[in-house]
Length: 129
Image 1 (tube, rainbow, N blue to C red):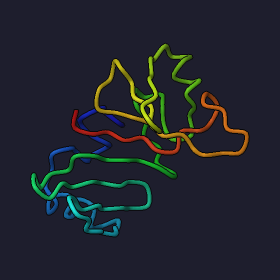
Image 2 (cartoon, rainbow, N blue to C red; image 1 turned 90 degrees about the vertical axis):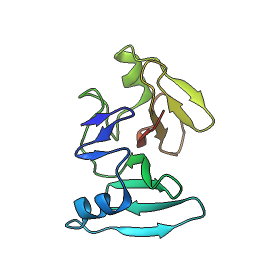
Image 3 (spheres, helix red, strand yellow; image 1 turned 90 degrees about the horizontal axis):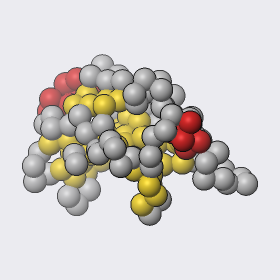
Image 4 (cartoon, helix red, strand yellow; image 1 turned 30 degrees about the horizontal axis):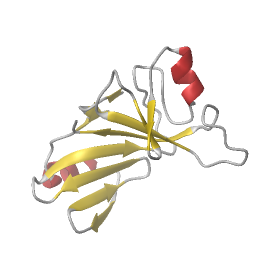
């Protein structure tokens, strides 16, 4: 289950780096250190841990992740599915945000004959809003 601005499955925004590593150590991960944050990546999840705060500020799902937002929207769905559910979205740069649900955004897959409404959702991110 994906909850905007809160959690993805059992993983929550606001956790510290060590807490996260303890929770995902069974499944394995790749850690990368960047200027302002660390990233922890598994086969279906990516976490951003801000160095200054020491907390998870963003979680992204991709690939074979099966969890859904509102129990209906997941990786592989389309913006047209959001329209069918009367969920309002706005495009901001290359992401789609939901005005009624702060703390979540979508990125569409770059496919041939790209159509904004029909391109599959490739990434779903939750973040501190």
